[in-house]
Picture (cartoon, rainbow, N blue to C red):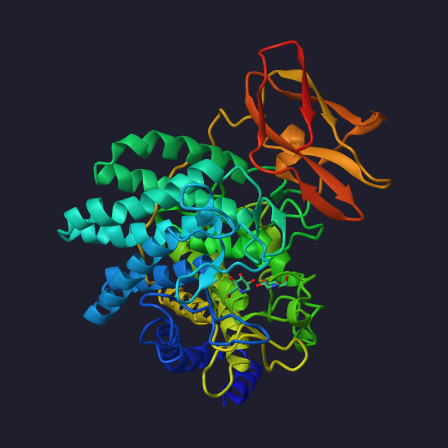
Length: 574
Ligand code: NOJ
Ligand code: NOJ
């Protein structure tokens, strides 16, 4: 039905939005129901899951998603907590579910697992069995976004409870759980991680962005509830994360997009970065590019480059105008389940655009910079760099074009939503039929939040307003000292040793761009690098062999450079 409607209206052009309205009016309630069905113990598709446990999907084979992922669960509960705390859904049944989620996650934090225990890194474990026992099979671990996302969800709830008189429970019960997660972020943010797609072991923009957000709001929350002893360490590491967010291995000024991962050997165009923008949206931060707000020039440029990378890889996108909405996926090189569009990534494009529209409306103007110019030129080839006030005709023209563009992404997902309204993980790149895990909880939650953004529903900010990149970011400026790194490492023929680390001069934890050491004095490998003076620099050696990357084991190596002169570091591969 939607398909016919969308086609007909699509041809008529101007009333495209109508079909989106009708889709949302039926799909909206189904997405909420779809989320709730996958939460134990009473969700209709979650029988056997413990109370408050979010099952990723009821699919138990090809793929088996009958697990609870910390990332998926936290994003899902963030959307439910937003609904509860803003009064969209203030039912006691939702409150019960949220309380069960807190209890479940508090327990899961204590479950020893292949990533460690509560105090030795176990919070980075990506997924657990739905009865809250550890999953011990091989997996891409650790994934360090989970604790940050979980803290963000819980802080949102905690702030609401604190405002509503439940201060004792917040300080004595909720806070210790949040503190575990934030303590994890403080200790491990500078270590490599698997990305949110569980494939690349490096640094990852989404992870860095959500870690930054969590520590920033964690510091405010701790201050508010009187837990002041942690505040300075949260703020210090939030500042370091904000530095790292600007790293040259993420934002690519030449091509105008954010490289999603410092490793992986791909283009780096990836929904990772759009998800980072929407999950760190703070309306009061305006279009600040420091935190890649949805309407910032960098995030808009990035959106265009990301979207365009899918125009020729999915045949269902054939014949669509080069400035119109299409189906998008995780990243163009994806081969998982054959590499298809995903509902949640296509909704993320719409959501970023709706967030941007809400920001422009709130600030009463829209700014076109040389960075965002190509994004806006899609809608008006003659548009020039400048600030357009909401009373100008250029503003109106651009706003309605962006609104149609945004609605177009919802309409694409609508077109490929089966008539029963169910949302799987993916849909076929060649015929649009559902693919991979059925009833993916995260797909439903992504629809819910995109629809809310379209409605300009506003949620609490997290302190993104007015943040400035600290002048103390290591490696930014100032004098350097020559550091010679020697490492003893036995290798096989064709295998090489590289170094990467926490500063620009060491390529910001990029296995892709890591610096090759010389084997002239084998088995000692050597390189001399100019590093910022008087700075703590963390680094690791990596091996590359036939394209495969092996990192040294944790923890990072660390050196504090002198104010001047030169130094030699003698290491042994670990
Ligand atoms: C399962 C992961 O969940 C998915 O993200 C990944 O693409 C595949 N394994 C292939 O590595
Ligand atoms: C695979 C996705 O790549 C990953 O992000 C997600 O957490 C799991 N599936 C579970 O939905």
